[in-house]
Image 1 (tube, rainbow, N blue to C red):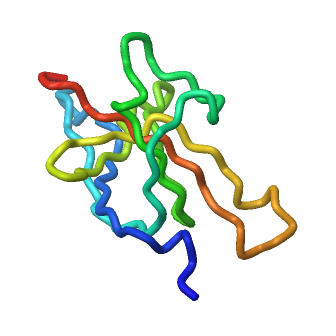
Image 2: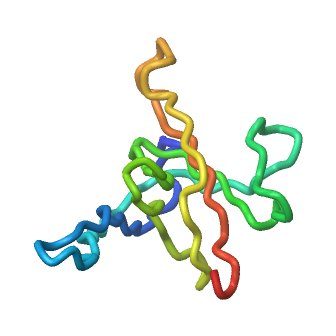
Amino acid sequence: MRSLLQDVSLTFTRYEPETEDEFYRTVEGATTTFEATGSLQPFRRGTLTTTLPEGRKAEDALVFYSNVPLKSADPYESTPPDKTTINGREFEVFDVGDWSTTTIITNLSHYKTILLGVEEGG
C-alpha cells in the first residue's frame, strides 16, 4: 500500500539571505532547488487553526503534508519563504507545523505546510 505522504512531488526553491560585499553592496543569496513528495490537500476553513493574511481566501491556500521540513519567511534572518509552482501558479510557504516528533507512531511523523498563492504583481 502506498503511503498517503507520497501522493505528489513538488519542486521547491529555497533562497539564502542577502549579504553585503566589502563595498556594502547587496549581494543576492544563493538558491537551492529540491523536491518534496507529499500529499496536497485543499485548505478547509474551520478545520485548521491557521489564520490567513487579511484579504486572502481559503481558495488562495493549499495544505501540503510531507516528510520534508520546508521554510517560511524569516524576518530575523531576512530570508524569503520556499516557493513552488502548482498548475502554473506560484505558491510560497506561509506556515509550517512540525509533527515530526510529536507522535509515538514513527511512520506518521510529518510536517503540515500551508502554501499560499502569490498574488499577481507580488
